[in-house]
Image (cartoon, rainbow, N blue to C red; front, side, top):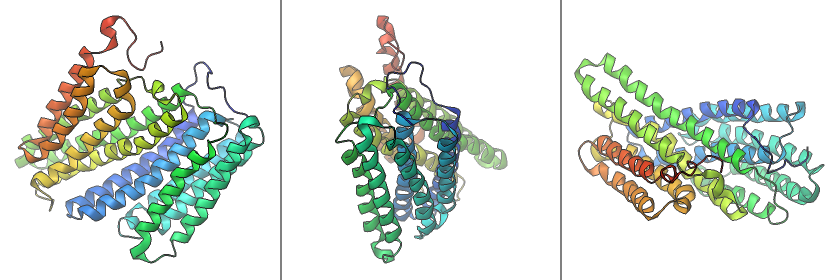
Length: 381
């Protein structure tokens, strides 16, 4: 298991990586469903906090495997088996999402530790042929192992102190790559790694498309709300398509040239991914509010849609668009995101958000390098 060449031509996601992502579809969907239930019951603070904690475990496990794979993917039988063990840990975590939303994180912690212990084995195996990055791989293995012991110990703390203990664990997890990479950096393939992020983004946006389909299903069963529900379905599709367009407009591979850029790109994606998952839950809240099945109505219900949209757009602008856009784009995108935030205070918030996002897309199309004969953002140069 030697380091992969970061300049390897035609490097693309493997079938194993795509198979690996499938279990995260289940975990993300379960987290979004539980967030939706918490919001419609007006348990906003508890629901959002639980969602953010659970989503951290989902995002961090996925991201660590993805960056490891771009550096050391050997695709032999042992690598595949260890990856499948990690997938089993994700399924255990997904099974514990519901209890986590009620304050019991035992099952999610156990599932998470299963994933991370398998990752320790991967790093130890990689260290044998890592060459100049041997110390780095060993630091990863040691750091991850120590933090997993900490996670198991958090199960012993009183319920009232768990949130503080969890946040300390988050800091420890985030610190491991920063400390480990201080020596020789593990090699990453910019096109491969950003393709993986793009594929996971598509998974998350797919949850929003599911919410759009659910609006149509509800419309067929509730003739009195037929027109509004169909409108929500159409607007959700428009918004989701606009988010896709905005995400894939910039050349993402150019955003991870240095270690600092890579850490920023990876860590800020937590906001982007969590926002995309929360958007689907927000659409479901809007559907329930419209059919009088939600205790959350008016601006509060609308905020469950507008806040995730704004955070998604601002996150992508900050890590990928900002450095590769002109003054017009760098004004329109963040201002548009702020306007989306304000939509919750106005009538027809989802419609207004859709109009604003379409306007952003129009600006991106007009300011695209294609008009100057250059490759589109994201294309090879």
